[in-house]
Length: 355
Image 1 (cartoon, rainbow, N blue to C red):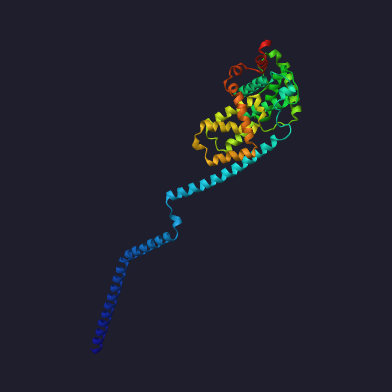
Image 2: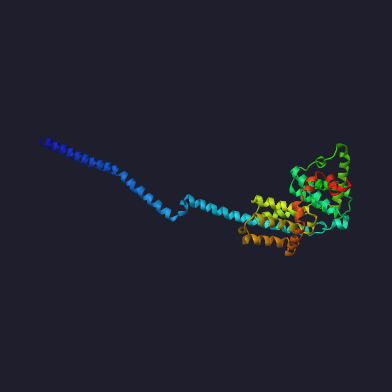
């Protein structure tokens, strides 16, 4: 009996211990569930801490978070600095080119005599004939859409040849064709054919072509194959680039028209190509540009290239005196220009009494 009672007490004690263990497990699970429910609040707190850390990182490294306007300004400044450096390098190259032009034009035989019609050719109609040749060359260059360099080269070959060789006036048309033919071959990528330089009948074309080839060889021999001689248009283009005037189309067009008229005039051979190029630009600037455009930097640039090209104030005075003497004839005489249709008509225009 007593043993049975003891067994009952043992079972009761084990059941109570189980209930206690179950209660502790239940409480543990409940506490665990409450901890799980509080996890989102902890994660929000962690996110807040992360955001605060990002803000501190921003304060320590502001360059990583620049606005778009600041980035655009920074890029604009870097582009401007690169542009200024490229312009300086370009100006240095232009100055070197102008210095080379100045040295090449000082070589013996590079420039023609300024009085070759009086001394070598001894022809009173020579200056007028030369003017007609120049106008014909510029007209053919315009019609065939050739480079202006070709026209100035051809005119330079013409003057240099007549400065050394006396030539009859009836051969002037053939010489002018030969000069333009050689200049086009030297400069143009697609030079014109010999047929494009003739405006005569087909029956006489073969004889004219044979004579043209002879004059071409004679011209190269007299010039000693020195064809790459700087002329006024070369210096003109370099000065326009250095003075940063190439964007002003009206100014460049007017300056070139002045240079073309100066090069056409025989008396302007007394001046160097550098003087003609610089003064044509200066006259165009005085006419087209306002007074505010002649700032200090532009005046300094003009003085720099004038010194480099050895254009002195005495040359300026001589240019002004020559311009006063020939200004009316240069800018008003258009009838003779319209009458020049071919090199053969040059003789007819120069000697109207003989026909």
